[in-house]
Length: 139
Image 1 (spheres, helix red, strand yellow):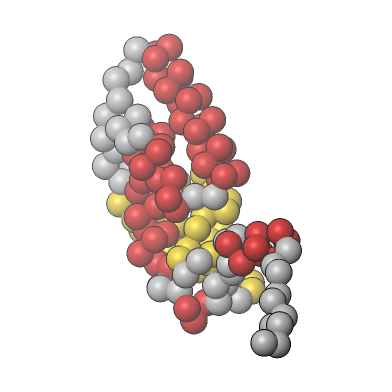
Image 2 (spheres, one colour):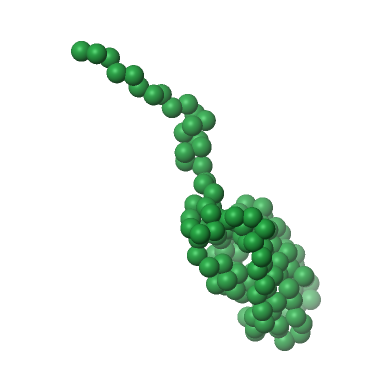
């Protein structure tokens, strides 16, 4: 019997295999629907009518943490003024997208509410065959 050589994977190789993998733009769906729905979700979180955990699937850790902090601050401000949480009536006016690199989309969603018009800037990156928001900025 001839001994066969076995490749023993190092911890680094195993970690790289199971770590999140980048996805190219052609492997990903159209980002427009996610930008629209994520914007509505973020506005509902800030209005206090949606839990931020419901958006966790589409946010990376930094964006999630930033949204949690912003949601807590708006909840405090509502509480201090004695204003109850109310479902916002926002309309999406436009979505502008650009792709600075393969697997990356930067979008700006303009939404109009009863009191003001807002712009939400979102950076999406392709990971494991789906888009994830890595940055959110609400203007």
